[in-house]
Image 1 (cartoon, rainbow, N blue to C red):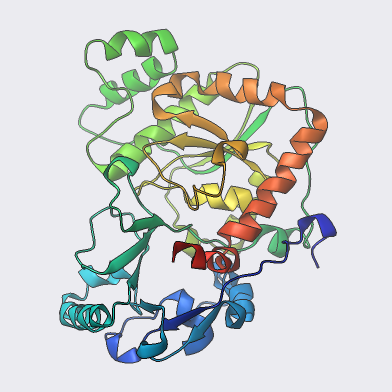
Image 2 (tube, helix red, strand yellow):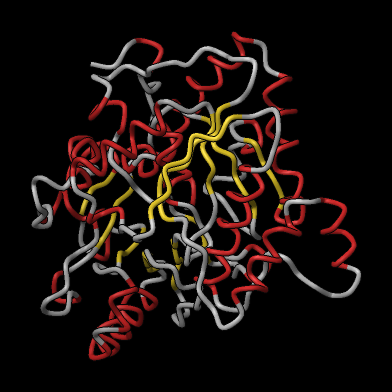
Length: 372
C-alpha cells in the first residue's frame, strides 16, 4: 500500500464512450494497451518487469471508458499502434476504411504512434498521440503520450518513496549506454566533446558555424547529446557523478531483472537523473525518473511534454536548453543551491505524485478526456 503522501488524489474523470472493432485489427498485430481492459492483455514474459505496467490501468478502466457501438461513441480507436503500419503495409486498406467510416459519423479517429519516428500520419480525421515530437514541426492534430514504464516505487520500494536528504553537493545519476559514437572521424568527435565542455570555446566555435552537439541523423543526434552531457558533467566541479556506463545498448523492455535492479539502484542513490533524448525526440528515462520520485535533469531538444497546458514542467525538473549544454554543471549546482532541505524532499514527493496522477497509464487515461 502507498503511504498517504504518495496516494494519488481522487480523480473525477469524465467517462468517454469509445469505439473500436477487431475487424480493423490486421492478423498478427497486437491491439493497443488502451484496449487491454476490453479485449484482454497481450501475452508478455512474466519475468519482464515491464509486463506489470498496465495492471492498475486495467483495474480502473471501467470508470474511464465505455466500449460502445460507433453510433454512440465520442471517439474511435485505431486498434493497433501506427508503428506497425510500416511492417504491415497491407493494413493501409483497413486503416482507410476505418477512417472513412468514422469520418462519415463525424467522430475523430484516435491513433497511437509509439515510436522514435516523427513522420506524420496521413489521415484526415486522425488525432495522433505519439511519443516522439519536434515542437517546431508539430502538427495541430498531434499530442504527446508518455513513454510508459513500470511503477518503480511499488515494484522495488514496497510502495514508499525512499526520500533523499539534501547534501552539500548534488549527486547526478546515469545508468546506461555511453560509448562514443563511432564515425569516420573519431578525432572530430573527441574535439567536439572537449570543446563542448567549455562555455567560452562553445561560443567561439559557434561563430564559425560549428555545431558541437547537432547531427543530421536522429539516432546519432541523440547519442551526441547524451555523450556531450556525460562528458561535461564528468568535468564539472561542485557536483558528484554517479555514472554506470555500459558499452552495450540494452532496450528497456529486454532488460533482465538484475540489470533492471542495477538501473533502479543507480536512480535511488542519486539526487538528480540525467535525461536526454534517444533515437526519438523523447526520454524514456525522464518518465522513469518521475516514477521513482527523483528529479530529472531534462535537456530540451525541441521537445514537447504531455499536458503542457496543465503542467508547469519547469517546476519539476532542472530544465536545460540544448544551446546551454556547456553550462549544464552550473545549472544543476544553481538549482540545488536554491532548494532548502525541506523543499528538496518535497520536490521528490511532487515528482512522484505528478507521475501517478498524470503520466502513469492510469493517470494519463484518467486525464484523456481533456483532449476532447
